[in-house]
Image (cartoon, rainbow, N blue to C red; front, side, top):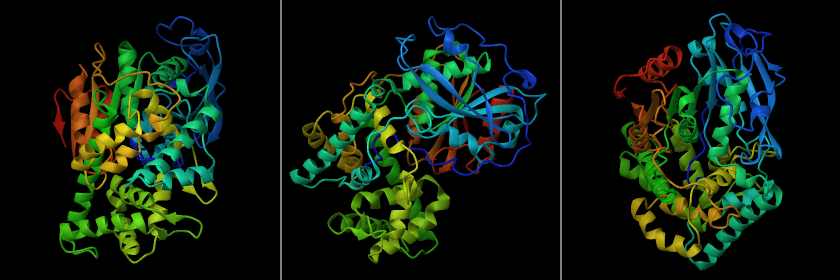
Length: 504
C-alpha cells in the first residue's frame, strides 16, 4: 500500500500563473547576483556552497538549474549527486526580501512542480517579495532519482491485498514488498543509504548558501514539516522565518504515526459522511448509513474486485486509496460520493481514476517516482515493522484503533521489514534551541497529519508557536481560512510571529 507511514501531500498541482518576465537571476538583494554564501561553511563543503548554478529561463518569470551536492556528507570529496531546482523570480525586484524555499511534502513530492504552481499555492504578496525556489529533494523526480520498479510491477504492488486474511495472502503481500525492496537495491543501491531526511536537510543549507541568504526562509507542507524541523535541529542559527504546515511529530514512532494516521482518515471520513447525510445525499440520510455503504464497498471488493479500465482490476487496495484521496480536500467529496455509488453498482472506473490521481498514475505509466521514494525515505528515517511475525502481533492493536484502515497502514510497512538499508535515526523530540520563532500550522480534521502532531511539534520546538485551523482537509495555508493566511504571510513578509498560540 502506498499510504504507509507519512502520506504524500496532494496539493499544489497545476500550471504556474503568468507573471512578469525578468532577466535577473535574483541571486541577491534587488535582484542582483549574490557575492557568494553568507555565514560559516561546514568544513570540506566549500565547493558546494561556492558553486554558481547556471540559472536558465524555463517559463514565464521562472528559471531552472542543477545543483551538485555530496552523495555522502561524511565523504564530501567523493561522489556527487544532482538536485533539480526551479526559481520563480520576485515580481518586485527592488523590494525583494530574499528567497522563500518551499517543499510540498511526501516524501517524494516534487518541489520543482510545486514551484511551477506557485501562482496557485502562494499568496500574491509572497510572490511579489520573494524569489521562490522549489527543488526535488535527493532521490526525487528530476534530481538524482531512486528507481525500483517498472509500471507493471508497481501496478501489482499498489493493487496487492493490503489487509491479508490468511497466511497465503500474507506471503503474497510480503513477496510484493520484497520485489520493491530488491528492485530499489538493484537499481539504486548506492543512493539508498543517503536519501534520509537529515541528508535532505543538509542539502537545504547548501541551497541557502548558494543564493546568498544569511538565514533560511521556508514553507514546508506535510512531510516538508519534518524536513524543515530537521533543518532547524541541524542548523538552528541559520533559521530565518520557518512555517511548518500540516505538521509531523518527530517524537512519534512509525507505529504511532500509522495508527494516528488511520484514525485521522476515520475522522475525515466521518466528516464527509456527516456532511453527505446533512444534505440528504445519495449515500444515505444519516452518517451511519453513509459509512455503512463505504464499508460495504471496501469489504465486498476484497473478494470481488471491480472492473477498472479494461486492463486493471479495482482491488480492495485500490478502493481504499480511492476513498482516502478525496479526504485530503473537501472539494473532492462529491467525487467520492459518485465513486462509491458506482462501486456499489459494480462499476470501478471512477474509483480507479481517484486512486490513479492519488498515485499519479497516467495512461502511459506513473508520472514520477513518489510511490517508491516514500518507502526509500521512511524506511531509512525510522525503525519500522521488522518481520511478518511482528506485523501479526501488532495487528490487533491496529484494528482496535481503526477497524476500517488499521490493517492497511500496518501491512503497508512490510517493505521496510525487507529494506536493504538500516534506519539511520530514531524518534526524538526536536527542540532546535536557539532558532528564531517557528510557526506550526495544524488543521483539526486533517486526514493525513492529525492535528495532535502539530500540537506535539509546536510544543517540542523551543521557539514554536501553534496556529490552529478549525477545518477539513490536509494543511491549513491557502485552504480558505483568511486568518491562517494572514498569520503565515505576515510572518514570512515581516518576521512577526504570533506572540502566543492562536486559533483560526
